[in-house]
Length: 244
Length: 318
Length: 78
Image (cartoon, rainbow over all chains, first blue to last red):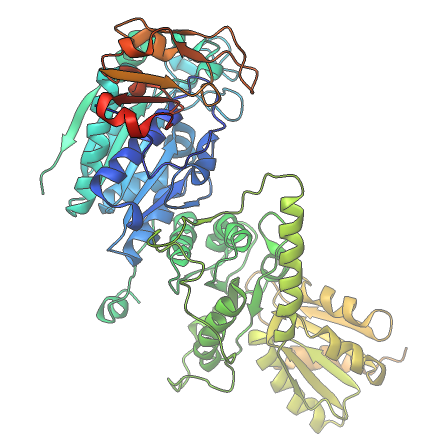
C-alpha cells in the first residue's frame, strides 16, 4: 500500500501551475510504463504547448514535434522501429486544431502508436485562447462572451470522431478529477499501451484535465467544475474497443 | 519506392500531406534511420516547417524537390524558381541546407548517395534541387555506387545520438527548444560553425573556362542548354565557357572570385526571374559585368535564343 | 499502520489532496516553502489509512505513503 515515485518519472519539480492536470497525466503514464516494463524501449513525442518540457520529466527517450505533427513523427519512429513502444502526448490545440490532419490520418492508417490527448478546453500556454474543445458558453480570451455555436462552432468530440475510423482500435475518454476517475484513467493508459503491444491499431486516451489558471479558477474549484460542466459535454467512458 | 522498399525490408509510407511527410522523415531520422521524402514546389513549401526543425535538431535527412512553376499553384512545367527557398532558407531561423543540383538522370541517381553521405557527415538535411525537365527525362543510367562523388569515412551509426530507447544509458531528448539564457545563441553559433565546415563540400564543373573571356553560370537543365550554346558560340570564335554549380549551397563563389578578373562577361542563365544571379553578383562584386537571361513560368530557353542573347551581351564593350 | 509524508518543497499548494483525504489529516501549512507557496502538511501523519487518494490526485508527486514495514527503510523517501 505504500507509494513512491515511479522510475520512469525523473525526480525533478515540474514547471506546471498548481493544480494542473499535466502532472497527474505524466505520473500515470510513468507508472504504467514501469508496470509494463517498457521504459527502456519507449520513445515519446512531446507536444507544443505547456507539456513541451515533458522530455525533462520522463525518464525515457523523448523528442519534440512541430505543433500538431506528433502523430506523423511517431509514425516515422514506430514504422522504422517495430520493436519500440511509441506514444504521443498532445493537447487540444495541438491535436484537435493545428494537428487535426495528422491525428485523423495516423488513426486511419491504424498506426501502432498510443496517443494521450490532454483536453483542458483551452490553449493553456499561450494565455487561455479558445480551443476546438472549448465548451459552449466557456469564456476564453478569444471567446470573451462565451463560446457560441453561431460564430465558433461546437466543442470537438475527438474520441468519438476518431472511433469512426477503422484504424482506431481503442478510443476512450477519462477525467483527471476524482480519485476514482484517475484510477480509471490509469487503467485506460495501460490498455492503450497493451493495444499497441498487441499490434491492434491506434489507441487514443482523451484525458479531461483542469487548467485552473486558464479557467480563472482556484485548483479546487477547477476540479469541482469538471464534474459539472466538462463531463456533461464530454461524456466519459470507452467509445471503441476493437479486440483484434 | 512503394514497390521496392518493402521488398528490401525497409519502410515506405504515403503521407497525407507534405507537413506529415517531413515530420515522418523527422521521426525516422530521430531514431537514426536513413530517411527521405520528395515533392514538387508547393509541397516543398509545406515542408519548410519540418526542414527548420530538422536543422534545429541537427537531424540527417534528404529532401528532393523537382521544381515546377510558381508562385501559388503556378503550373506543372519545369522551373528553377525555388532557388531562394532552397538556398537561402525557406523556413524560420538561421539555417543552411546543403543543396545539390543534378543536371542529368545519372546525377539524380548519383547525388542520392552524396546527399545521404553529407546528411550523416554533418547531421543536417540535404536537398536535391532538380527541375521538371531533368525529373521527367529519359536517359541511360548506370546503377552503381558513385565512389568518385562520395564523402569518405561517413559514420552512419547513429547509436551515439539517436533515440533508441534508454536501455543501459540515461534518457535522451532531441529538441530544438532551447529556453535557457544564452543557450539558443550558443546553439546557433555551433550550427554556424558546422555550416562553415560544410562549405568545404562545394562542388562545381568548369567547362572550357581555361581561355574563356565570357562564361555562362547555370545549373540543372540550364547548364545543358548552355552546353549546346557553348559549342555553337565557340565555332563562331567567341571564347565562351560554362561554370556549372553542382552545390548551390555552398556556392562556388571562390572560383568566381578567382576568375573574375580574366572574364569580360558573366551571364547567369536560369529558369527563374533571377535568383542564382544574386549569388553570382555577390561573388564577383564590381569586378565583372554580370548579365542575366532567364525564362519563367514554365518557359524554357532554346539554344538559338540563348546564342542570340549571348552574342548581344558578350560582344558589348564596357 | 500507514504514514503520509508531503515534501513541502515539491508541493505547490493546490490543496487537491485536502479535498479527498477521508481522514481529514491534510491541511495548508502556515509556513511558506522555498517557492513562496503555502504547501500542504499532515496534522497527524500516523492516522493515515493508506488509501492513496491524495497520491492519486497530487499533480506534483509530492506525497509519499509508506506502510509500517516499508517505513523503516523508506522513511524520508519522496
